Image (cartoon, rainbow, N blue to C red; front, side, top):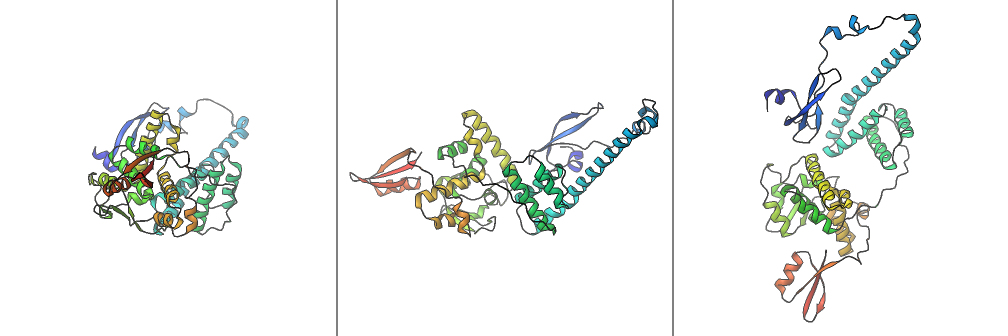
Length: 388
C-alpha cells in the first residue's frame, strides 16, 4: 500500500484506509479516475474528479462558443434553461449542505444518547433517501409531499416515517407523524436443517458466529461485542454483558459444540471474540448465504438474516416449554409484549425426527446434551427424539 493511499484516500462509508485498487473509471472527456475497494466494509467507490485546470475549458472561452447566434431570438428559452440550471444548483447545494451538516449533527446527537452505530447508520441512510427524492428535512411539509407522491411500499413508507420522526424529535422540529397502513408480517422461521446447512457452508469465523446466534438467540450486535472473558468453558455458558435496545444482561447455557468452536478461533480481534464491526460480518455472511442458496436451489435460504436465528430460537424454546417467562428471560426482554412477537405458534406435527434410545444414565445424559428430548419409557428403555 502506497503512502499516497494511506494518507489521502479513505473509505467514505467506514473511514478505513485499508483499500485495494479496483480498476479505472473512464469519463466522457477521455480521462480516467481511480476506483477503490474497501477491505473493511467492501464498499466500491471512486475518487472525486479533480477540478478543471485548463483555462480553455471555461464556459467563457472562445472554444466554448461554437455557434454564432443572436441573443434576442433565444432569450426566452435561454432564460428558462439558466433558471432551471440555477434551481438545480441551489437544490444540490441544499442537499449537500444538509447531508454534510444537519445529518452529521443528527448522527452525533444519537451517538451521544448511546444509540448503537448500526441504528444510527440505518436511520441516516433512510434520511438520505428522502433527500435524494427531493425532500428538505427542515421542512416537514416537503417531506410529507415526497411521502405522498413517491411510489413506496407500505413497509418502506413506514421505515421512512419512523426515521423522520426520530429526526424531528432529536432536532427539535415540530411534526406529527403521518399514519401509515403497514401490518408487519409474521417472522420467517426456517427449518433447523436449513440453519445447519448454512452454518456448515461458512468458513470458521462466520460459522462460529452463526452457531452462537442459534444457540443463544442473542442479537447480532450483542454477539459482535462478545468478549473472551464472557465465555465460560467449564460451565458451558456465554454472558451477554453488552445488551442492545435496553435489554437485560444475561448468562445463557450453550452446547459443548458451541464452546469448542469458540475456543478454536484465533484471537485476532483483541479482547473481542468476533469482529466488532457488524457491517463487515453481515457482508461476509450475505456472500456465503447467497452462494449456498444458488448451489442448493433453495430460495428460502435468502430469507435468513441474523435476526432470523433469534426468531427461530424463541419459537423453538416456546414450543418446547410453553413458558413465556422463560423465553422472555432468554431474550433479555423487559416487557413481555416484546416477547409475544417472537412466540408464534407453528404446527410441528408433520416434522420429521431423529430418534434414539438409552438404557444407562450416561447414554441418556449424552443424548440430552446433544439436543434430544425425552419422550417416554418403553421395554425398559428410554426413548428420545430431536427434530431433523
